[in-house]
Length: 324
Image (cartoon, rainbow, N blue to C red):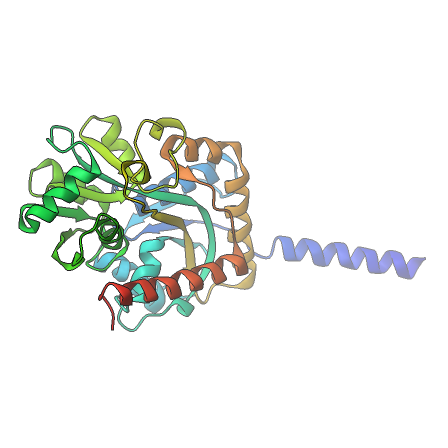
């Protein structure tokens, strides 16, 4: 009996050590773009929710590190902060797209530990609130009539996820040579919308969450949501591309990666923190308010999901001539 009690006590101590081997402090989330875009949204909203739930001590710092469509941040983490246990970085389908296309020179997926997803953000196509364009078919007809007359702005590089979304929509709308579609790349959705409002471009391709603030302020009107059916909550009034006769779906997953040299204990902490955040009522409310759809996975499952995303985007990019 004493031996059994001794083993039980040892197990309890070992479990406690495992549970508290990593204590977070000075936590930080890097948003690999300027303020106002989808990565910035992911860092700030998840950081705030983690704080509200008491999952991290104090305030999680958010650092905007723009450049190279996320490549500057990726290289910074890979080369200079590869063993930072207190750091997570916002990621999305755009991250997978750039990795698939070799847009982060010298960097690969396996340099990072992929933490988890916090939802899927369906793509949208929008115009300025005072634009004469009211529907997606109208926009596509303008491109068909004169491709030089329409420029579409997005927060990802040429060949990135925002670019791919509008090209897929153009394909579905009957535009044979999608390379004719004029796409203008900016470092983040916020900057792209600013150019739309300035009249420099005629349309914007992005995601529901990054468009939400501009919709609320009355600056833009969403002419299509790239979801299989209408979203719930604040986005319920926006028509899908599918119901307008253009059968295209574009979902942008949102989640996080961490430095590749992060310890197993720290990685376990962050995967659990993301899982607890996702399961909370607070995060469910954030999802409903910002048009996020369910996507819940962490750890090994998420790692495999990202690899699958990269593989499928590589194939898609080859189909439309962006990769050989």
